[in-house]
Image (cartoon, rainbow, N blue to C red; front, side, top):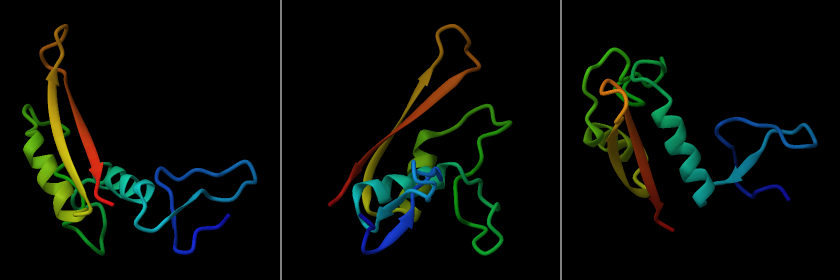
Length: 105
């Protein structure tokens, strides 16, 4: 069944029929797809909206989870989220940041 207000899912995938997977606007799946897109887009990547995305963490020694939360909430206000940092016990130069998303419906 086609959504009434379709949007491409992100990451972009095709279904078994070869058609792009679509999600309904303002559903939990749509909000999560939008959050996913924001964290994968470095600021300055989009010519039409250079402020869109997050400050890209590449080549940075410290990444502040609160900075990622701020960027996500600026572009996607339909959710509550928390970013949590976890340092690797085996390699002190490695850090994982997990973002927990709660969609407001």
